Image (cartoon, rainbow, N blue to C red; front, side):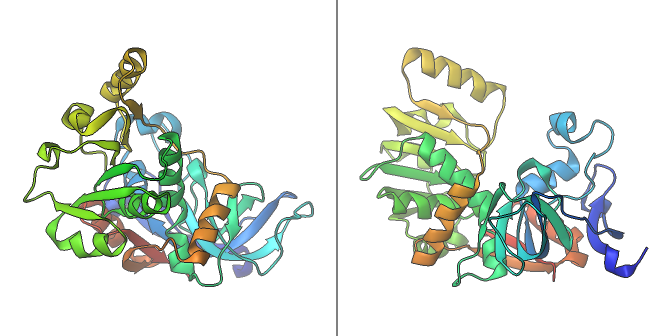
Length: 324
């Protein structure tokens, strides 16, 4: 196979620890008539990536592959340059700088990817670098979806638990954009960063039990999936919302019971990523209302180390993989 027809990718062919990831030379994809071929400049490692790699929880195997992964290339967001377009593509041209969420398609731990032009794909703002843009789609679109589900409006009070992670940093910024007063909860070392993102009050969870502060909120968002509704219910107004990025049988039961009894809404599930919402985030980046918090950079060859770091659970914002 000609070298021009291959690409490098970080792949995993079995579930397990970070060490199952390794570099391979594989076939470079060719765009279909409705697709664009993107030369990837940057991607990220998210908590979703390491959970899929490890099949944690086990139910991941039901859609990713029961005994081994169907798609050996992880990665769910990217920033790069369009290298080629299919014959039917009208929204993009060769040379466009774009960023995207691949949703469950995965595939961004590679030098190239093909995407449908109608996917969650948008032009990168001029004031945003490839690494910064790559860190926006998953976290930004997820938080935007959840806050809209909670009907966030001007003047509301919002509490964000896990405010220093990828989702948390976007939750603080988006809640402020919509005019909310934001109380953020994080560890001591991350308080200054979270405050700089716009939080009105920052609580150190190592010093303060946020569930006992005696305040009520219109929206309580657990951006790391480590709390329970029972822990947080006294913090929420009767007509308010509890958002949890985790999921499980208990949350599903509370969601159904609360809906029947008129208690606070339980908002869980997955975001519906689309191009219109990504363009909305691009405009926020352009206007300076949103920025990506980047903790560390790794190369594609350092994917094992990157996964190990993210899985340890102490990253601040986003971890970027510089592909090219």
